[in-house]
Image 1 (cartoon, rainbow, N blue to C red):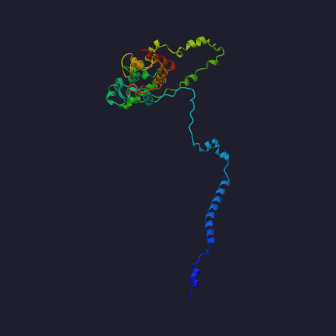
Image 2 (image 1 turned 180 degrees about the horizontal axis):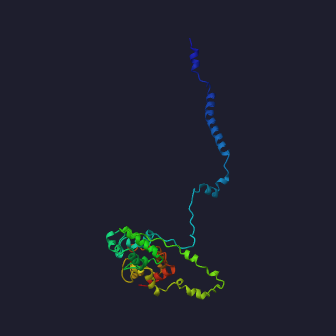
Image 3 (image 1 turned 120 degrees about the vertical axis):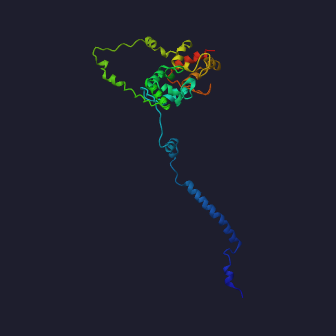
Length: 291
């Protein structure tokens, strides 16, 4: 006797080869059709505004939250430097390493005998120059207050307890109290001098010839570290002239102005921003001629 229920439970809905082929084709066709529909939806869907991708719009969108802008400072009097700022810009070249007999910064033993003379004596020597140190450390534009602040900063680091001099009172106060010349009815504006006299009145604008640059080297303190024919703290003029040719004039002018170290030894040369380009050119020409 045949069990009809058992045979029906294990039978397949695919009865013929044609049905099998149909199922296989649909198994491939349905997923492919679904992928095509999905791609069509993505391609033809809603697109963002093209203007959002313009370079200036993108730049505004990704710019940082804050930014710093630099502008030229308004013309006016220079702010007084602190003692630490003067030391780092001027004094550290010699006092940082104890060059040419300078009392090394923080060396209490070296500074002790000089501190006994008091602050006034130290400031006077720093302003006028002493031994190898030029007046004001070679920075002729430093005020007496700035020099005094630097002396106090270095002396206190060596164990002193000097008080830093206060900033001078505003110079504009006496000027404001004085009566203005324009208030006098009889006063009349003086005629402007001729152009030739104006040019003659400002000889500093004309570069000094190389033969006259010796006083400039003295004025700006170059002789504290350099000599004509022998090495001191820095190379001699003859050594510099032998190493560089006349075509190195622009390069050396900028080097003296900006300062530097490493070409002639470990002792750095401080910057000289206070020296005019005309004086720098005259001094470098003078040195390059010392062959």
